[in-house]
Image (tube, rainbow, N blue to C red; front, top):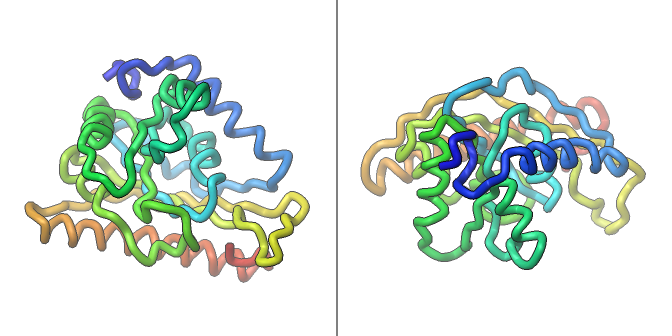
Length: 219
């Protein structure tokens, strides 16, 4: 590891600049509100789990977090100059649909170094309701002992007619950190996965209810 909570080969100053950029450049297109940022633990290994319904959530959460973070990102995003930049700011390429331990071990190294890793348990974009989850997040918890922080985001999807509203309201809700115990074997992994999925799905439901009550719509 690089010693600053990022994977080997990352450039800390570039990472910090990328966070600032991600934090502010989308504000011209969205009205962004973050709820519960103070719940982010200031130190220690932290696994951020988040729902995923568009390409915007990773950028929003990356910029919102008050700590450096390495996200597991689909490998297809790492081509050309963009890919080199993502590696330089400490993001981790993950091949979907394949058994690839290298990115997971890189993530474990970041966590054991006291850093932050972000993952989208659903594995791909969808409704963001977290009706299903893959085992990677639970495996990382079991391998590292990291605290888990659920984060829900709503408001990034385009309406059904495909027309983006003018600066729609986007809400990010940070949940309470918790420390699940993922047991051994496949059974332990499956149970841990369901616990993480349930916690994140419940947080998304809380945010959906709040947005509906305040007239912002669900997604």
